[in-house]
Length: 475
Ligand code: B12
Ligand code: SF4
Image 1 (spheres, helix red, strand yellow):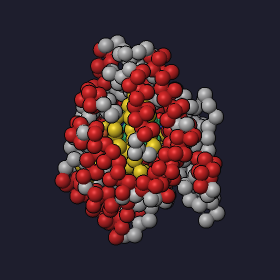
Image 2 (cartoon, protein in one colour; image 1 turned 90 degrees about the vertical axis):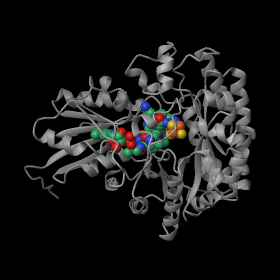
Image 3 (cartoon, helix red, strand yellow; image 1 turned 90 degrees about the horizontal axis):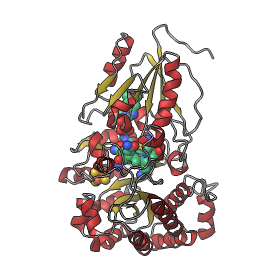
Image 4 (cartoon, helix red, strand yellow; image 1 turned 135 degrees about the horizontal axis):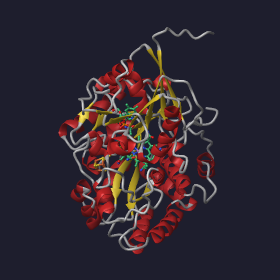
């Protein structure tokens, strides 16, 4: 078939670059999600443009013709984005970079691309395209924090079909100001909610039967945000959209079991909780107010509330905080192993650009990887890029390696699986939790140990064969 291209039609190539240094969970089709930022930019592009997405999670970059190239990047991917942009710039093709890294350090990005979009793209993209068409592309555009009620639907048709999970975002912004986190810097501190009907409609349109709701806090801190979370779940149930999902939320949702029940009934299987630490002083130092209010002594009650409602807990812990010592890290490892947390993201404190942690460590000359932009690829939370206070950088690296060996030991992962199954009574939630542990384990040991296959370990415990979508094989 001959492609019909009118004279006015233009080609926009959107690129999702891959961090080629650290792969693991991040770029795997089993764990990662389609680049919804590019799906949204595509949806905002005028109809006379042909848009395609080149997704390095699935295919290594090879040159494709385009009139304009748009790239996205987290910090850990930005070096690759700069490399690819350079290839187009050499040929005189204009390049635009957006996303969290460019938004935090637009001055750096401006050296490597023609145009930097700082902040959210919705308010600037149509104007940028207009400027490009009129040979008036500017070097910098700054997005506003628009209300989300009119947010466009992502172009689901442009994503690679190989992703096991789909993604949807229902809200942006976070009123908290945790020191190590960049969300409040890019999305602001006020909640902005998407239209409820749009959320559920887009959720239903996602081709995958497993979805990652990429909100930073699905439940939120306000009465309105809490009501909205339960409304989303009620609508999913009422419309009989049968999907399983995972999201982030803060701990205090445990005080609202009716919403937890609705979430489970609407298909929620795992929730990521930013636990960070079980030590009060450390929570204070990193500004984690919710956890302090709940109280570390009540953490187990929180986990039980999730379990009673059939949902597993993915605990996100940070290691290498200023007050950490080798002993406190070992204690945190023991704490996890003996706790009701079902699976763990055990990350090393990483100074993300634009955060309080970054400015503090920079000022104190305690960032070890500053050969930018090349070193940004180490900013993955699985590498040591800082000089901790109470040990050397090398010591932290070695202690973390030992910590991962304990946390992601096959026997421990199996024990956790059985515990989750018993406590939640939900085999799906237990399978999701084991799947997460295997993914993080493989990320932590990438390049040093053999990767393990979730389906094999699952089968060895249950005797049941699942595929990578956690469906029964041959079902
Ligand atoms: C989903 C998610 C993931 C997914 C997929 C991420 C991806 N796309 O590659 C997974 C699980 C793989 C993941 C992994 C990681 N993540 Co993550 N993740 C998120 C989360 C929760 C949502 C991202 C999202 O989809 N947002 C919705 C879209 C629409 O927003 P957006 O990307 O910002 O896009 C808007 C603008 O930035 C702009 N824009 C973006 N791209 C472009 C391109 C163009 C051309 C234009 C014009 C505009 C534009 O317009 C868009 C619409 O407004 C964010 C938190 C957050 N609120 O963003 C953290 C976040 C992005 N992750 C973060 C981190 C640190 C990581 C990890 C390093 C470690 C970890 N703990 O998991 C890894 C590294 C991944 C890698 N590839 O190397 C940080 C990134 C900070 C930074 N400076 O890089 C964030 C911000 C969380 C935080 N607490 O700070 N993550
Ligand atoms: S870590 Fe979570 S609660 Fe804290 S600022 Fe970031 S998104 Fe908000």
